[in-house]
Length: 127
Image (cartoon, rainbow, N blue to C red):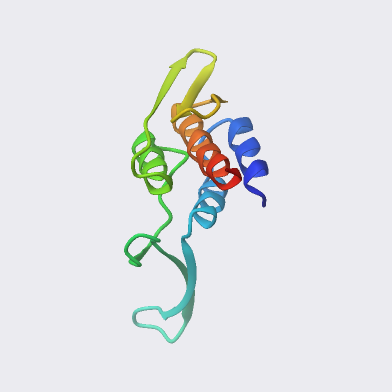
């Protein structure tokens, strides 16, 4: 999925979405690894998916970027460690902006901040 399309989907989402979290992770450098692990006390194997963090290479789950303002903030800092920004919310939704980029509107503060962070990534790749 293109970065522009992902931003559009985030802005249109009604709430947190794990499939969007995974798309975001892939856009910012998380690497997927599939493991097959035997169940304890059984010969049956179970497929598990883990993701390598682009900063430290440690394997784990994809952060819940779209569910948590803290994780969305982590995303913004991953994309631009010296970024400045803000997010606000009201009954009708939320708005976020990073650096001098455009305002991004979404249904929750976390979603708006994710869209703004990816918008900053898109803006920096076009300049």
